[in-house]
Amino acid sequence: MNILVCLSQVPDTTTKISFTADNKELNKAGVQFIINPYDELALTKALELNEGGGGGTVVVVHVGGADAEPVLRKALAIGADQAVRINAVPMDARQVAGEIAHYVRSASFDLVLAGRESIDYNGGLVGGMLAEYLDWPLVNVATAIEGGAGGSMVVCRDMDGGREKLEVNLPAVITCQKELTEPRIPNMRGIMAARTKPLQVLSPQGVAADMQLLEHALPPSRQACKFFEIHQMDELVEALHQQAKVL
Amino acid sequence: MKILVYAEQQDGHLKKSAVEAVSFAKKSFESLGNINITVLLGGQVNQQAAADLGKYGANSVWMPAQSTLNAFEVHLHSAAIQQALVETEAEVLVMAHTYCGKSLAPRLSVAWDAALAAGVNGPPECAADGSWKVQRTVYSNKGIATYSVWGARRILTFTPNALKPADGASPCAVTAWNVSLDSVSARTRNLELQKVQGKIPLTEAERVISGGRGLKGPEHWHLIEDLAEACDAATACSKPVSDMHWRSHDEHVGQTGITIKPDLYIAVGISGAIQHLAGVSSSKTIVAINTDQDAPFFKVADYGVVGDAFEVLPQLTQAIRRLRKG
Image 1 (cartoon, rainbow over the protein chains, first blue to last red):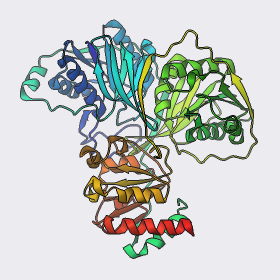
Image 2 (cartoon, one colour; image 1 turned 135 degrees about the vertical axis):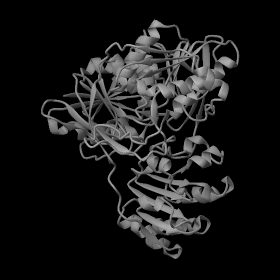
Image 3 (cartoon, one colour; image 1 turned 180 degrees about the vertical axis):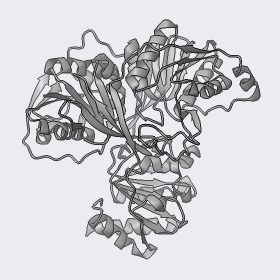
Image 4 (cartoon, chains in turn green, purple; image 1 turned 45 degrees about the vertical axis):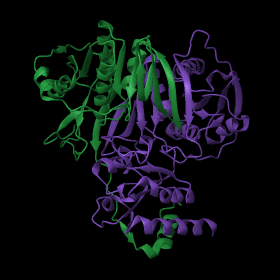
């Protein structure tokens, strides 16, 4: 199958978040950027699906500036055949999905995989929007993906209060959740090969954003912890009942 | 202003998020005056439960006359909502940022050509020029971002537990609504459904008891479950616990798991790594139980107990049972 994997770069999960003086942007000083963990699962799954038979290519696509190229090279080292960077400043999900949709229409993919959300803006919207732009079916939050040879896939996904196993016809957009697979660490051969794999830069279509980011803030700090001894559990319960009013 | 609210149901029962959605719509826009809230039920539910949505601000409730929508299928529900948007001439669509909402809202944003403010923390600030100012958490709760949203059509989705529903008004009329989906077909085929029985869904829970490596093994989870049962809480776990398969991944809360904001979060034997705190730090009240008095969790907790979970949990469970009996 020809599979497209949508990739974003995010601060490493251990990052202590701070913002620039005008609160418009993340303070990037000292921040290590990584492939969004859910996108990394999507990439690994794409490789596994093709290794399991049938073959095909895996392309990763990113909407953003040249600063994301190390992350795209890493995706190539993990095993993607080709990387595409759409050279636009990402503003909101509709813009990103619109740009990717345009690229998908110009190519020939059987399946688009994306992370269930990015761990920076946590929207979880690009997959669904992309599916609608392309008029393809959508399966959100997949924990298992199988098949593909007969033009359809069987997918397990998380839903509110349970899990569902369903079948979906290709082409489709599927977003990826933990448990789908384990991420791969690139080996030396992969890293060497990544240097010569194609990384294509495309001009954006100029899809407009609907939202404007005004400012960032840090969450309000919390009050000091009040400690209770083991023999004071009735007092703790009383505090939760009377003061916090949560019991 | 005409507002459409999409209210979720499961097995014929309104979900908690349904009442929240109606309340959220009312609280968000009542200051504008002259608002009209129509609720589209995502399937058939009890007539009285439907009418009672009026108490939270609904002016009318549309109950599907056919059973087509009773099981959730994103493409059918998306088409039904689009039909209702046209019939109500709504300018704003409100729904919950649940798994269902997260599948529907992005599709509808493109299909209906509407700006989407997704996963907001509270009602928008409506400016005089008609734009909204909304806040949502970013970087998995490590930050808050404020956005300006505008446009003739808008979709607003809110995080569950964003506000306490307030009733007060009276029940409203429930209309049987004809779902005309002749030209639309489901695009996924359900093969199997596994429902979590007798457990409170984590994202809807008002109270959550969460266990970490300090529990020393899955065989000790009855201590967490007993405490959860005593205070009607959902159970959760840290990333190492789900990685070691002590508990299933859908209980993992944190930066790469589920982000929650319950009223009460009790963390047992969890040190409080930054990735874990990210997912739970917007809980209203946090209790940490840990043997290590220097555990980072105590820096964000409101209440703390330094002690062995195996001693503390039974005592705490008993104390809660005494309160509830009392």
